[in-house]
Amino acid sequence: MALETWNGRTASQTDADSPLDTTLMDGLRKDLDHLRQALYGSTDPNFHTPIWGHNHDGVNSASATVANGAITQAKLANAVVGQAQVKSSTAYIAGSLNADTGVIITMSDYSFFPNIASTFTTGMDILSYYSATNPDSTVGKIKIHNTHATDAYPYWINYRYITASEGQQYFILKNAAQKIVLKYGFEDAPPEYLAVINTVAADNNLTFVKVNKIEFDIAIIEI
Image (cartoon, rainbow, N blue to C red; front, top):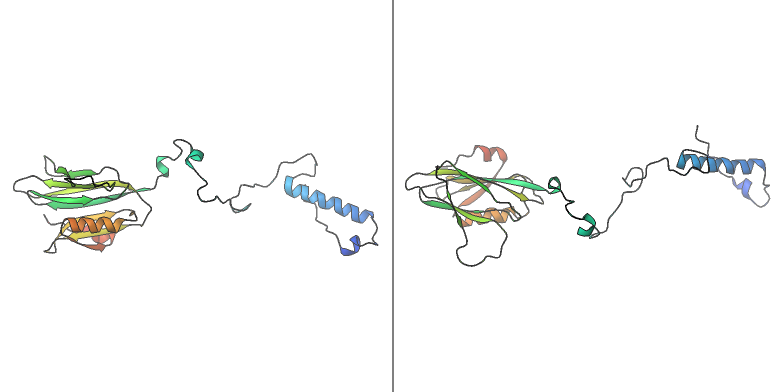
């Protein structure tokens, strides 16, 4: 069924001296049919299902807006936010430890427990960094120690964290002799990533240099 033509009224049809004739009334009928067809796809007055989508997607209708704070946990109910909806990312740390030496690692807030590996067959010791009082902090901070009496060994640390985020960020950390002894990379960095790097550098008497991904990948760690 072709869409009825919209007629519209002219001033000469609606002034005080104009008659209520067939032209005026039939035009009004056709305009009503036009509106029914545009809205419902039919001229049947009993048919009231809209023919056009109306889902506030910003295309067929205005975008829906939600007031700040309007979506509460009660609205979300239990277990609505799935694992895939949590924005998380990964950090990678690599370095080497001389015999009977350690390194202090600071992670991001909202971090999960790290995966720590080493070619030292009996493994690196994992120690608590804070040895006295409760630090009242949720930022992950540990010390790993190479207990071998004579040999140096590399280590690798991977962990996942919830991020906001700041994009890829990569750093190399050097000792006083300007040897690269530690690499720290964020796949998609959290907002406090510079505080993390500054803390790692200060705790281990190192200096850091921000690098790109290629420089990070090819940087050689001294053992």
